[in-house]
Length: 90
Image 1 (cartoon, rainbow, N blue to C red):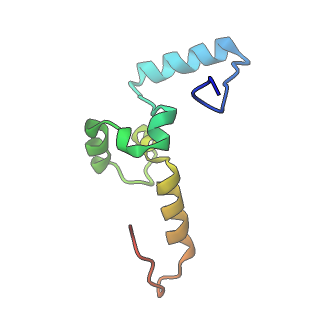
Image 2: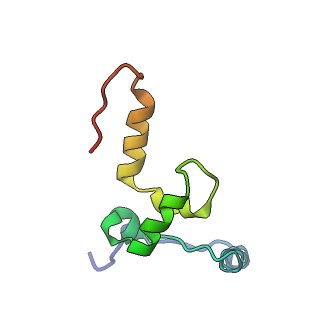
């Protein structure tokens, strides 16, 4: 495989994409890369520390950095476990 990713994005509406990028830049929103989502250890320390000021369920753009396979799995398990069960954390 010569491509670094299995997903090959296709832009269907270039104008809409351009407006979305401009809006995110104006709001000073940074998004994680595919590699940072796949391996949270790659997320810069400054971003990790900034997440401490935001609750995981708050409607804040910083929470986009929390969307990784491991965090969503832990959240799903915690949601499914009744309060009387013991669900060990990692």
